[in-house]
Image 1 (cartoon, one colour):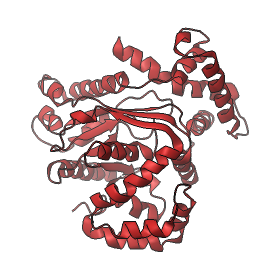
Image 2: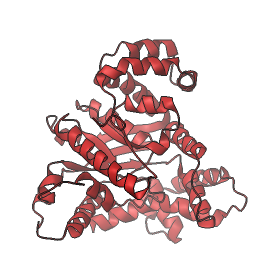
Image 3: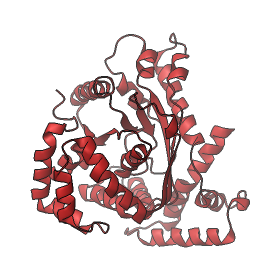
Image 4: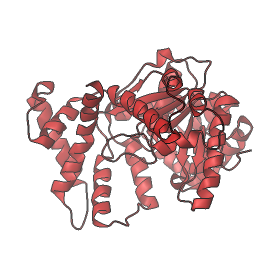
Length: 378
């Protein structure tokens, strides 16, 4: 059941680990991680795990904690003390990093005495057999992309049924991004199609169905986005070449940069489960309007719970050529951010590099969380 998309089971863990450790590319990637003291010790520690939860708690959690110590000034979570460990939730968040959004969430969950969650990952990222094995052995299920209309319908039915099965039968929480792909300009909005997918093919009261999934809006705030210059570059390429599509190498570079790049302070805020607010809605409203209202509810919580850094205020002032938020940062912080911005812009290589456009787009990435939080709090 769900064999082509589901996360691997405990019974599949041992043969999967043996395949991974026999793969020279996988072992070379592990050996290149600067916080790994001994590949052999890591291999033996993983092979001693008899369940995926044990692997997460004893091995993956430790590795991700070391990664956070290397690439973040801090990794903090708030609001997780309200989570009922007996319930399965859908954590739906803004999408900052291809790999780490759900990975760092699992660190925070385990730190709070909760079980790590399953994660949806697009099959466009599964560009090596070992990547597929690694993520599916780490509680990831596959979201199929770039299908024909007929294939997409079948894939949506399967994915929706798998998510319900995971929540209701496995009693396993799930992380989902609020949209397909990252919001390149950090103007985070929940796609209605994601909410529709959750109840696709379901009969009866859609409010009851969605409320039973215990949706928690999750806000992810980065002080620095190591992929900011790559996102800006992609925006210029899409502007200049309407048919432009990222290559597999582009995806690999984004994953590597996001994982290993410096992020500064990283903060996760779990909002309040919105089940009660969903149930109170008028079930007589058209389905389209209800879905839109729930998406707006998600966005309001995500935006209100951003943690803001000096960069956000500086970017807004630089973008508007104003000093509206000058009391929220120092002169030194502004100079440091300006230097950082130029360093990132210098990394972009394009034949017709439009630096004013690229600079504007990067500033928007840092200013939009502030602007959205202001609107949410108004």
